[in-house]
Amino acid sequence: MRKLLLATVAVLGASIGVASVADAQTTSPAPGTVTVRLNGRFRYYGFYAADRDADNNVAAPGTAGTVNAAGQGTLTGTNKQANYGFAGFARLYPGFDGVAANGLKYGASLEIRQDQASGAGGGVYGSISQQNRARGALYFRREWGYIGTDQLGTIRLGTTDGPATLFATGLYENYDGGGVNGDIPGLVAPALQVTYPFATVGALYATNKAVYLSPQFLGFDFGVSYEPSTAGFSINNNCTSASPVGTNFVNGAGTFTAASGENNGSAGVGCDRLASTPVNGETSRRRNTVEAVLRYRGTFGGFGIAATAGYIGGGNVQDNQSGVAFNDNPFNGQTIRRNYQGLSVGQFGLALTYAGFSVGGHYQAGRFNGQWNLSPKGVTGGEAFVVGTSYTIGPVIAGASYVNYKSAGDITSSFLGRQRREIGIAAGATYAVAPGLSVFLSYLYQERKQNGFNFLTGQSASLAAPQGNAFNNKVTSNLLAVGTSFQW
Image (cartoon, rainbow, N blue to C red; front, side):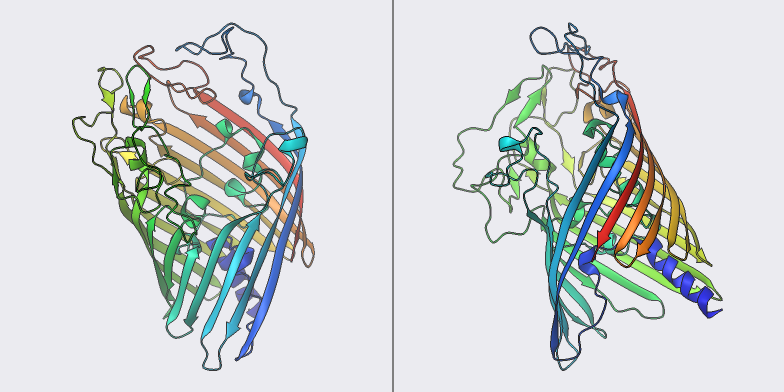
């Protein structure tokens, strides 16, 4: 019975979500001491990709290097990828953990990555000495410190996971490289990659925030966080180093009006603390975002349960442009000026476990688009769910999950009532060969659909093409990969 209970608790913890290696503290320091960590991860994959939809042989470049509004052009040749390859990445997780003589716990963790993409071909593209991040260069992804006690809870500060990420339940990212949110989705072209809508993505955790995590009481604990803006970890306001996320407006004819007359040494587009602006593209940035999650975990006669309920909400950079009406209609000849609104998302997760088996899911709905992007007023909101299962027996974890996501997607298409639908189906297994060494087997199917929107060229409805683009409205891919993981 004791072995059964331990197996249930282990699977229950794995079903809640995949914690960063930076969060993995194997031993607690003795009071009055500090433990320094240098964890790391190296993964390598060989894979087969059936992703012919990424070959741009429908909307081919014309003689002038462009395609028309219908997505047609003079065929000058097509691109084609090999359907096999090798891929991998490495990461480092330095940090330290301390315990004061009075029981106060504190420490800091960093996550260093090197998987930033750049052009192929070696030379300048492969150099790690470029000014900009490139293939092989190192950069910080997470940077945070913490302080707290077992009785009062913990405060985290920095670019770190909020409670919606840390408490995420029923996502089933605990097998192979992480299922639908694992390593291999990125092996196909971005146009074919399913948008993963849940909280365990960098769009939420890679922003500067303050987090409070409560102690557990009668199986319950909770967490709250506050994110002033979408800024990263910096001591500067970044008003001179950043550039706008968009231009002022795009009118029905598809022409742009660029921002002008602005002193880039003063408050303007790109500033971390920007609160209002006449630049409409900047008003799609989040402000004052709050996460609040309540979680319950318990075991009953060998059965385990984990359940969460949470909310993510906030505002956005306000649009103070005068003399231009808000407008999402691309056909009336008026200037496009989107009336963005902040996030407002409810989340619910559940995982049930017994004797190594786990089954459950996660559901969220509200005002969000893409991967935690904002939507204009009047545009359909987002709705997503995942259902999954996993089984742990000895050194093996096998699992499968299904993700279904409905969203506005392309805003113009959504204005016409054409919702984006995305599906991800994953199955795989992890075999722990030895401490720190595992092998993976992974399968992933991805499907994206939105009528009138060309996923390869980004073309949508316009005055010149009021019905939208007829090509590449549905794209799919299949991936099969074998991988190995070294983790310490």
